[in-house]
Image (spheres, rainbow, N blue to C red):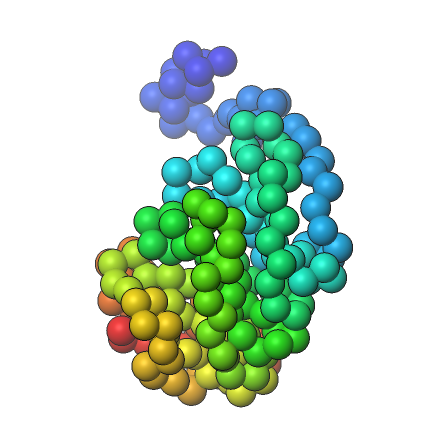
Length: 191
């Protein structure tokens, strides 16, 4: 099949997506039971663990990718929604919408090391790939918090559009982008 695709590409032909993708890559390989009302999900940088925010159980499920089994359940604040890995995979940040906080989890011990107070309605978190910074959007206050991950202190609050939901940090860590649902905007922020 790959030789056919190569030959067709050489003459400018295009294969349909289904023909170019192996069937196994398009099929579900497992269904993993986790806690109640799973929302946010992320994979650790080495790719060995998957973390799921279980909003209905106020917990995080830890999945081992080699077995596709839950190997730990970590209690966190009320209604966890978003998860982000930082600290080269050794820390997990979990936004707790019901308790307006961020739980910081040590991924080696699977335990909460601290809880950071947050503004109203913390949603999506994102860790900077280059600095000791965590960014968190807040739907209740239409802001973005910048948190120092060494001291766990909020060092800056930035106004963003109405109902912020999505959040991304550029690969060089110099820009943050926040999408806002209610006013159809994206706020670009220099870090």
